[in-house]
Each structure stands twice: as structure tokens, then as C-alpha cells.
Image 1 (tube, rainbow, N blue to C red):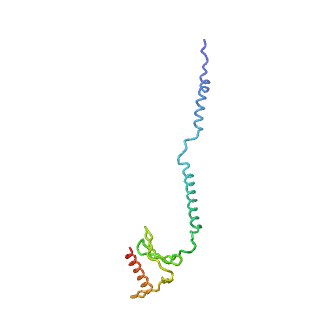
Image 2 (image 1 turned 120 degrees about the vertical axis):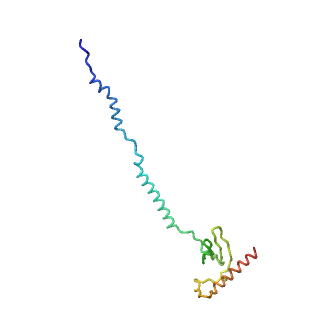
Image 3 (image 1 turned 60 degrees about the vertical axis):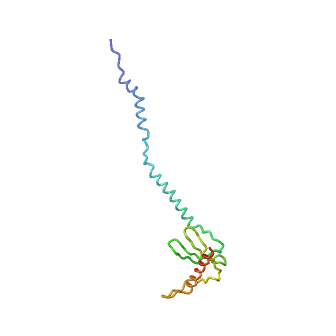
Length: 153
């Protein structure tokens, strides 16, 4: 009797075909995405957004007009009396206010009428050994205002 024919060489590729198809599909599948692949695009988008934001703020500051009153307030002068303290002369209508300005508050030091305080565009030069009359009168008025304030308070 003759042994049955062996179809192993022909049967083996047919049996392994589904497995080889899986192997082929696995190699055609996309690789695991690289986390750094989109980093450049993300950083460019972030820089673009920040650039637009900075340009918008600059344009807003550049072209927005400050809130202006009707011309009733005018700063006549500012003098620093300390590292963070100032004395400000402010014209309000017919009155001139002397304000003490600190980081914590603003206080009215004295109120002058318009004609009461001699205003000069610039202080005359002080000669050595003398004090100008404007500075002397201002010092006297400031001393009187502070003296009156202490007596009242």
C-alpha cells in the first residue's frame, strides 16, 4: 500500500496565510507617535498668540487717549520732599491746592485763592548767601499753614 500523499508544503502556506496577514498589517500600522513631533508647531502657535496679545496691548496704550476733564484741573508744580513723598500744587477753578502725596494717602496741606499765591514760570536763580523772596514767602506761608493746622488739630 502506498502512503497517502503529504500535502504539507502546500497546506502550510495556506494555513499560515491569516497569520502572515496579521504580521503584514502590523508593519503597515502607523508607529507610536513621537511626543516631540508637534512641539515646534505648538511653540510657534503659542509665540504667535503672545505676539498678538503684546501688539494689542501696545496699540491700546499708544492710541487710546487719556481721560481728560473739562480743563478745571491743572498741575502747577511737583516737588519731591522724600524718597516717596511729594508736595503738589494743583489748580482747581479759582483755588490752588497744596497737596501732600505719599504712597498711602493724599492730604490737603493748604488752600490758596488764585491771586493769593504768586506763581512764576520759573524760580529766579538763587545767589549764594541769599534766598529769593518767592522762596521766603512760600516758606512763611507753609509755616503758617502748618502752625494753624497744629493749633486746629
